[in-house]
Image 1: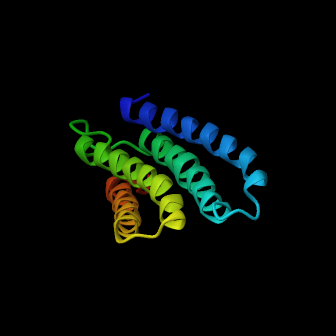
Image 2: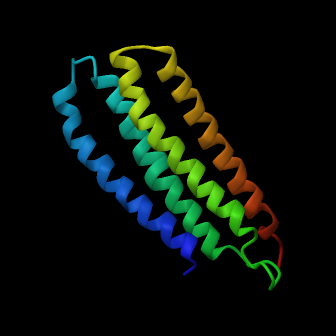
Length: 136
């Protein structure tokens, strides 16, 4: 299993545990001002952190290989996708509740930057996998 795949899979498992812990705490936040932002963080940890990241890692590993020189494409692009996805997700997990608790331009910009980072990660993933999707 490639190193980058191990990073994606292990990190996705960490996000799964974090999402489940946060999900267990959500019933106690019902009716509080933190309830909705924590619910958004929960869904992002679950969907982006666990599911998407697991898919990225397994796809990077299992999709048909390219030329022998670079069978999985650009390693730098793969690492960039990993970093952008995780930095964006972590920024969102912090900025979402903070912006709800005390709205400020800095938190709004952090949310925008986190969305841009995750969007760029998705584009990078598509760019890295697209050439490997081919007919037999």
